[in-house]
Amino acid sequence: MTCVHPCVLGLASLAILAAGCAKVDSRCDISGPAERLTAAHAPAGQTLPARTTVSGLPENPALADYLAFAEANNPGLASARLRWQAATERIIQARSLEDPRLSYRAAISGDMRTQEVVVEQMFPWFGKLDLRAAVAREEAEAARQQYEAERLKVAYRVKNAYFDYYYLARSIEAVRQNRDLVKYLGDVALARYRTASGTQPDVIRAQVELGKLDDQLRTLEDSRGAAAARLSAVLARPINTPVPWPAAIAEDIFEVPDEQVLTWLSESSPELQAMQHEVARELHAVELAQKDYWPDVGLGVGYMNQVERMERSDDHVVVGMVSITLPVWREKYAAGVREAEARSEAAARSRQDRQNLLAADVKMALYQVRDARRKIVLYRDTLLPKAKESLQSMEAAFRTGAANFVDLVDARRLLLEFQLSYERALADHAQRLAELEMLVGRPMPRTPLGEKSK
Image (tube, rainbow, N blue to C red):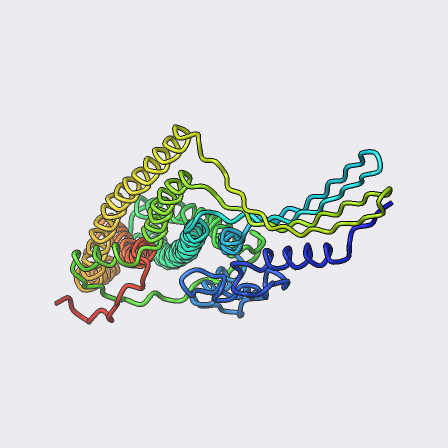
């Protein structure tokens, strides 16, 4: 039996190595996924963030501690990061050539034996590889922006749960203080009734009010577990993990024109940026579909060996080969172009629609920020001081018998309502600013709120 000539194996090996390293920055990369995440692989010079973990939180964590913990441990954010990683790995695949083909043929006819070895590499038409890489690069950049959008969403969910938890803490404290006050006033009413200087209805009203406040307080305290579980879920912690009460919220003021915020939305929103890269991807896809009208070219080298026993001859022939594909199905390629154009138009319209909806969301959030700020100033500077003054006056008048218990209860209720409304406005203001940061994709500038509204 005749063996394959050694030079054939050398030719085949050389062709395979050359094709395998083509279009891969002149190197064959055999490192693992983590080591390959370099600027050469990531889109637009971006590198994937290092995967970090935060093992625990301090004893009394601040909001920044919760945000760092969530960013390091939230599984939804980790999933978005891995999708980005997967997308970056498609770039090098898209700009690489297909595997070369190695074929072997043998024929025996009488005393004539012929064997042939051919190595062939197909090369796409000029520009196809670059366009495929461009499509993959835009997909990877869209995945990066989607990761950024998910990161902002996780931060918003943390802040939203945190500020609701803050409001719950202040509500419990306000109701507890009012319950203690009503209990004290009830004791006063009972003492006055025993000395015949008060009436039994005042004692009953105090007991009714105390019962209502006890029930309200128990309801709020029972809801702490659910509110803490909501925050723990975003942090990827067990939902039964105890969560300490938050610290006070800074009374910040946000004064930026609506037009500026809408400009930031167009420039910085990761969601819109991701959709813009999807539009660019579809435009490259249109160009790539138009390239299907052109043939792909194959280059190869073959080795032929013929042996004729009767004449004891052994001929060796090395030949070069060129082949092309025949793009004859023109309607098929036309349909591919029309499909790509429709996808491109759909992506552009989807982005415009999403920008309109986000702009409406931003306008609503801006209104809510202004409304919350107005309420903060109103309750802090006007209503709360007046309600406290009214309650103090009613307490003094009640002790001297100049006011009845009903007036005192009404003053106490009004103060509690104003206290809770003030804390709710603080939480709403912080939550809506957090929502704006999520929508716009950048921090919102804040300044300390002055003692008086200007």
